[in-house]
Image (cartoon, rainbow, N blue to C red; front, side, top):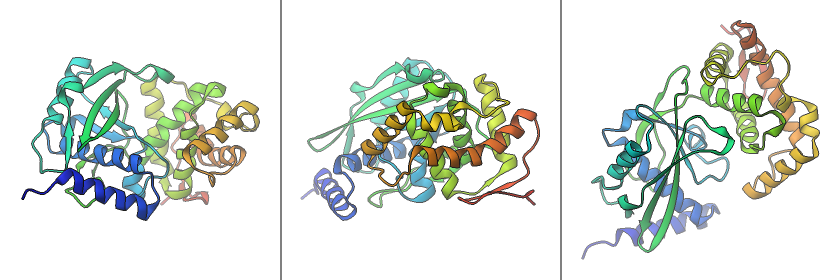
Length: 304
């Protein structure tokens, strides 16, 4: 008798949810994203996309540091909606080993990203099914950004031990540079509290070479047409951290994401200023920053 793969996968995800305490619906979405990435990695379109966004933390640390349901990619080539619709329809009908999922090629939708004035991006909507369970996926595809020092070949971790997606991904330096550019550009209007959280997690977790980070910042700001500030950006000031509206946004983000241990906004902004301001100053002056960042410990150097 043929094995009921969707039922088996669902039960294994339920078991994982009970064992880890993670929300089952979130695991279901992550599983669908993982298997979509596998389809991409096994297709002729592999070289046309680079993984970015919160899913990268699963690569770097083996776990998701905050709840996320969306997939972010940098695309190359024609950014038009028709082409993206064709690409993702192809991925939906790709022949792969049975992982229990079905992707509806007729349900692919593409529309421009408008919030936060993103950079020429498109939002792709997909519908996957695992047995009777429907899974709605959102994939944001950006175009035209600089990747410094270059995309990395990676193996994406799997939830249930299936064949892993092997694809290209952003380096940490470009992630920091893009989030910093958004902080500088948006100023007091910035409501992207997830960027503050992502940046402080990176500063506390990873080492950086100042010269590489400085180059990534310079290239990202230049590509996006944002001037490098000569003074401390508003988002890295005490005034921003103490702003009542920002503190409410931070508290709401922490509650919504279940991040009770994320710290107070003032503490986060202070840590980010120590991490980012010295490199930003060097980038603005056009000078290399020959120091090394020790995770959570500050800049030391010059680097060897």
